[in-house]
Amino acid sequence: FKPGEVSVLFVLGGPGSGKGTQCAKLVAGYGFVHLSAGDLLRAEQQRPGSKYGELIAQYIKDGQIVPQEITIALLEQAMKEEFGKGKTKFLIDGFPRKMDQAITFEEQVAQSSFTLFFDCPEAVMLKRLLERGKTSGRTDDNAETISKRFKTFVETSYPVVEYFDKQGKVIRLSCDQPVETVYGQVTAALKGKEI
Ligand code: UP5
Ligand code: MG
Image 1 (cartoon, rainbow, N blue to C red):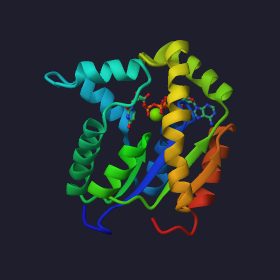
Image 2 (tube, helix red, strand yellow):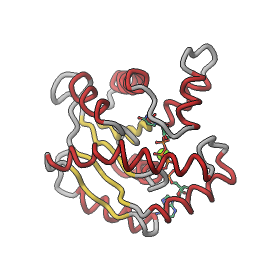
Image 3 (spheres, rainbow, N blue to C red):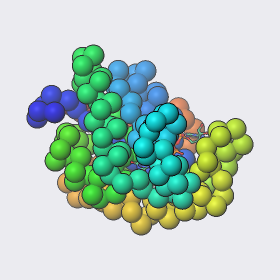
Image 4 (tube, helix red, strand yellow):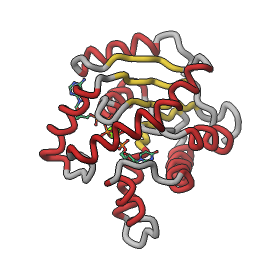
């Protein structure tokens, strides 16, 4: 995308911090397009004929980060499709979660305006994910994979938040509160921002 053609907000936070839930509310409230990297990967995994299906399944089950080329290609394709329909405001949920992804995406696809970071204690996220795991059908909503996802978040993904924080581009929200309260913080933080 050319500079200024689209606006991109990254939405980061640990597994189960509520990224998807808050993005859904922001779509309704602000007309963003919501693209969850995890959802795009799960869809690609299930697409008949995908050459990456097995690889993606394995990475997700292990709580590891899928090689950036795959995820960035999926995101870029989805953004171009939406751009073709006149959409220009994007919430990119659960991405970038590794430094190489952050750098490549901003160099090759688009610069981010800022990052919403959902800060949440692990105990709260664990409880939410185990509860969701009863019905979600997600292969990574089990105690063993959840602890791997937490480790990956701390070691690999949090440095991305720190990287954007140093650029003054992180809005930190505390999400150990009811959905509506968290959304109230989000809308307050977005007031007066150019998006
Ligand atoms: N819930 C939400 N908010 C609540 C609140 N305020 N109070 C009480 N309950 C609340 O929420 C999780 C659960 O909590 C839900 O049941 C919800 O009702 C409840 P959700 O909004 O789904 O949280 P979210 O942060 O989106 O959790 P998610 O599990 O989606 O986070 P992950 O970051 O782990 O999952 P994602 O789909 O992004 O990634 C999955 C995997 O894909 C990764 O582990 C990785 O293997 C792979 N991946 C990559 O390799 N590369 C990428 O770039 C992205 C993903
Ligand atoms: Mg999610």
